[in-house]
Amino acid sequence: MTEFDVTELVRLEHDLDGIVRPLRRVAGVVDKGAVNIKGDWRDNARITARAHGRHYPDAIDYDSGWIRDGYEAQIGPRMDRPQGSMGEGFEYGSVNQPPHLDGNRAADREAPRFEQALADLAAGLL
Image 1 (tube, rainbow, N blue to C red):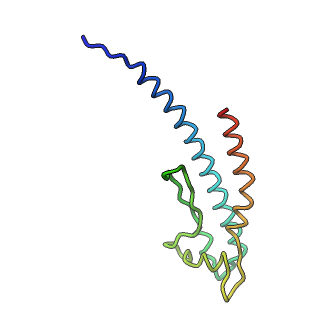
Image 2: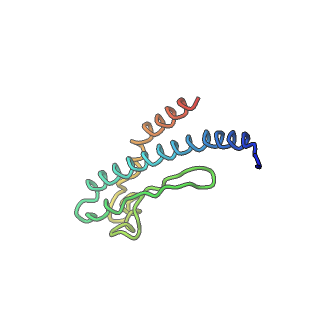
């Protein structure tokens, strides 16, 4: 009968789990922030876009995922949805309307909550 000492493998598994678990928690914080910004952005846009932009709020969404150096979320209007291509004009203005800054206001509102969630996560890891 052949026996293998897998002690080092078990230690490695434990060490990797100690790294992966916090990364998953960071991803959760990022996703929660993205959901909050998306919701606030949509709420803001429903007020500022009025009748001429009635489909625009529903175009606002987010994608998130792992990238080389971490985890990210991208929030904004989807070009494949009705009025999604009008996002730049709604957000930053055009010759026909002033900037609404709906996304900027949503991000500003979320910033302190996001920073606190990351600080709480970091404190819990120490």
